[in-house]
Length: 186
Image (cartoon, rainbow, N blue to C red):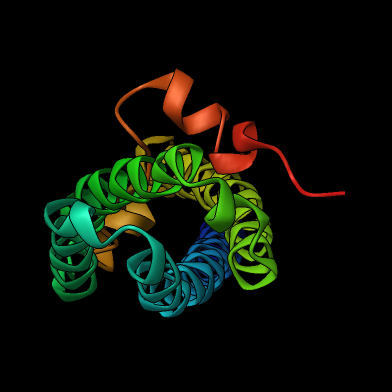
């Protein structure tokens, strides 16, 4: 009986270690995925001022839109919380969309090589961001599921693992159709 008790305790300990290590791997996957999103967001933030400057050369009368996009960029950059950052990034994306739509009113701007390159870079960034967001949200889903599932919820609770927030946009239409809908220049 005593050997059985020792074997059961040893088995529980090993299972606890395995579960703990799985939680750590899952948490690290979430952190890595967030890092990928952060890289793409920084890339987008770096492109916005260049895009504003390119549009500014042609669309002097669109000052309010240019200033709004600049303010949205600053707001998005200062958000630390995943949910707040997602909301701010969605507003920035809509502002950038309006900015690119301005190009329709300025044929010279639409034909400008610098603008076209920036637009293509932005479309590429938005696509990478969408992929990174999907991977991150999948990693968060898996991590949160582990935290809620038996028996890993016992280990997660003992070591104070906390659920993570999803990084998603409020509408599937916006989330699944990035700026690529403007098309790329071929």
